[in-house]
Amino acid sequence: MSAPTHTPPPGASAVLVLADGSVFWGRGAGARGEVVGEVCFNTSITGYQEIMTDPSYAGQMITFTFPHIGNVGVNDEDIENTLPVALGCILRQDITEPSNYRAQGHFNDWLVKHGRIGITGVDTRRLTKRIRNEGAPNGVICHNPDGTFDIDALIAKANEWPGLEGMDLAKDNSCTEGYDWDQALWTREGGYGKLGNAKHHVVAIDYGVKRNILRNLAALDCKVSVVPATTSAEAILAMNPDGVFLSNGPGDPAATGEYAVPTIQKLIASGKPVFGICLGHQMMALALGAKTLKMEVGHRGANHPVKDTTTGVVEITSQNHGFVVDKDSLPDTVEATHFSLFDGSLAGLRVKDKPVFAVQYHPEASPGPHDSHYLFKRFVGLIEDAKA
Image 1: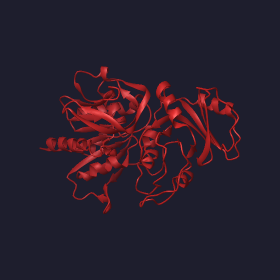
Image 2: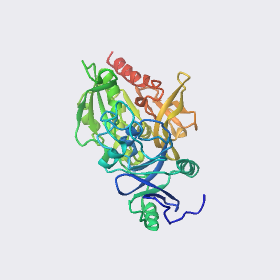
Image 3: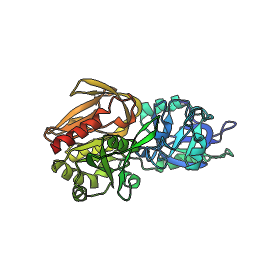
Image 4: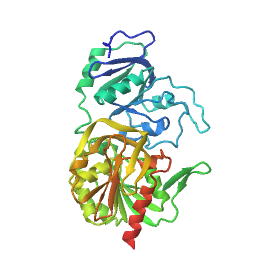
């Protein structure tokens, strides 16, 4: 990598600075100012609005490897959280005018409205190769239209940021009060549906849950009661659920697990069906006695092949995680059920003698597009078996 220059090129109104001193000049997008966090990359070619609002991206800035981000605009439906959670975005090309029948606005205006900083004109291929080869770095995006930047100060800020390891971000991205969810899946003809006659009651622990997970449960006739991340097992079981869902979320699972693991252990011991996704998968593993590790390069994209060893079927999955369960640490009571075909990492597990299972990826994100929807049906099937 060539030595960085601290002199901005003509027209530069933004800069990305990494902790190792690497400097990427570009043009500012979205809000003005600066933001510091972990720099990761996502290989999806669509779904940028869902990605920016995914609570699992708390503390991170996203490098989009696909160049045409913003081309379909934004709308009020394609969101996973009320507000964007990702700190900022790093793009190859300038954000263009939207061209889609569902567009309600411009992506750049949306970034400004929500105070999210972006940078365009970056060599995202070079940056992605750097992340892939050396791991996800700390970095700062600074957007200043007058082109004045204190690079040394930005490098210092990137180095001072503590990193995601050891961070519990679930509390900050969880709901503060419980609520009921009844919105079902979207259709072109009618938009989002509504839960009809509920057949089952699921309590979902919100560690930073994505809305489309809740929609998938509602679409299978589940009344969903969402509760904060710190809710006790006793309070959850007092709601008399037919099943319990452990949601996705951001941060280090070991840090979140300090309060979540004892709760999950009691829920598993109750005999209730339990299903976990992403962070929920990792914390379930911790509750069962396994360990988690920080990955050098996380899995973020919509093209990740995973093999279900119980059926032999390969599914194309959507993934977003920077931590992983150590497959060699699983106890004998737990069976590994899914593996990534990219790097062999653990992507699913189940308890051998209880209706308890989890996956590392996101079946609600529909990359296949429907390869992984069977997991929600599997959960509901366990609930029906328990009732029978």
